[in-house]
Amino acid sequence: MRPILCLAVIIALTGCASRSVRVPATTPTVALRAPYLDLEPGWRLRVVTPLTKSGTYRPEIGNQQQNGNTMTLSLGDDFIGYETAYYAVQPRGRTGVRIAFTSAADTRNGITIAQPHPSRRLFELPRGARYVRLLYLKRVSQTDHDMAVLASDQRTLLAQSTAQVQADPRACENLRHTFCSWIPAGIAVRAEVLETIRGSEQWMPAR
Image 1 (cartoon, rainbow, N blue to C red):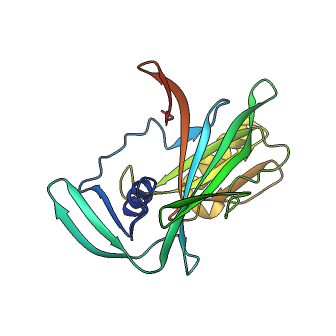
Image 2 (cartoon, rainbow, N blue to C red):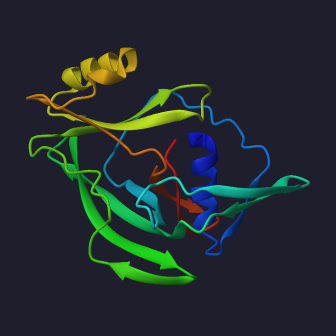
């Protein structure tokens, strides 16, 4: 399954606990200002992880039915639910940030239960990391990419690491002053910022 389809399914799952989910028949292209996003204080990270019997993060897609602009996807028996976890992007010093886990919950058969920790720890960064970046490695289109978490204690080294991974994904490794880790395919990570819309505060996608 292509990453773009998997991401669409995961987003749909956040509002639907059945084995049939509905997603737009045509997923719009997201125009990123840059192939990466630097996290800022006050933001949060929303992570949606499929829960399966096999332990994989890509639920098997069964029958597909299209009705106008909506496509209904049937998930196989391997799918048992999904986990939604949140992380706060907190200030560190005058210019840096740190990532702190805040909450997680599993949803199975329409029932949501809080969990003490996420099923997959994605942001265990080195103690000295101050600058954190989500890197989108473009494959086929703007929305068909892998994602990596990069961090460093120096902005210049973060930029160098980003260029190296973009040129060669095998360069994603942990060194003395830089950190790089891939987000497993099938797990959706979205940076969000709190905005006031019509007098109500809402978490919206960052940039």
